[in-house]
Image (cartoon, rainbow, N blue to C red):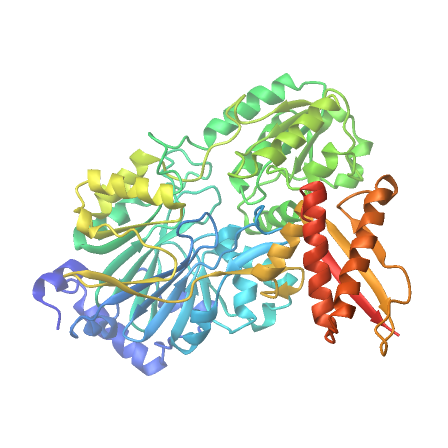
Length: 614
């Protein structure tokens, strides 16, 4: 049994009879099924009333270490996924993707390596999702293709996951469970309480993960917005209550750990929209923002209504989110305000607002297509006001600048973050991070969700808030962190790489393929085709030289001729040396022509030899 003080902390003395009845009801109705619960059972049996007696009894056992295994999201932005383990049972928190960079040409998305998860799949009881952004839900379809795990999240998050699984034709097999903020889910050794937090998408949650080893607070992405659009303020009181109980470890969002002060309220953007909409009188307005920022979209719609404008939506993800959010009541749109993008030509331009994707300058996005006159319904009219309501993600600055420059070139009036307050972050800055640390009062502190510089800066904030340096854990993806109330250990590790998704191929593009792609992008390719007699090994025709991305053949005839003679020399040397293996011929052509071209041009195209036997 837990000691009397612990009972008092959990409110057992006040609710003893209630828990006895609850335990009996649980036994009679078999309500302690760890997995495979329906949404109704989750909402009915796993409320915010506290632990069941059966779960409390587990705390009387000798405490074993709880393991925290980040498999993504540390040392990077995106690909967030964390595995928790206690006494042979596991849960997952988040399952996100990240976007490719210049080192991964041609790749669509990047997802976590599920190798260790699949190795342990019989131990995993459930997947808990903090919120509906792609870096937290984007890899779920790829995980469910490997094994089916029950998913627990808030209402909007489940709706966004549902749309994603429908696209992948996985919806019928999925077990999706809605959990309200303030409620909890009991799975084996884990009790996961959902705590409402503010973020740039509604229905975001942090988790209080209670195990027999102690309570772990996983904040998810959060900010402290005292004037949110939906008037639903972060539940700081619950974080403070947990801090008074005693928290073993805090895992907190580090994205804005370098930024001093507080993150501005979303309502600041609404004030800027009001100013800008008045300045755009007589002209069409196009606003590009993240499709998931429902509060931002709400403010755009509210301002359009005030100005007696119709709103059209462009971009597939924007259409999906607006549809889902409207159906669930997270987005309130007066009747007759939303119109189809195809019908904007039927209205005066000064009566139109277009809300679109593409705030990061993505080449296939609606905004990019509008800027380069490739959009079917929206053609730029000089004087149009374009508002880019987002900050470029690191690495996207060039693509955003390219779109802005093209819009200006075509006569548009472009407004972006540096000019007006048309974007605020959804992540906590330093003072908010310190407030979270002061409320939760963790024994151990582990910064997560950020690059190395963000994690390090967040660790310094923990140090400044009085957490001993030896209790601050700067971890990496794949490191197994074992925690008890006495100490922590990081001696072991598990596989935690990345898997590249290219079209329908998952994981079939590796380092060698990427190397070849970069080589092709940097130097082009020379294809050398030689037709030979299979018996005598004599060359039957002139070598055919094809250049792609290296030089334009018609302007480099002399160089092409020199390559041809160089190939003859290599073939003759192989023939005289009585070389029998065609692979040796190919290798010598590749190496010899590669060296010849570098000496001639100081460039290194890929050389691809092809030998045709007749």
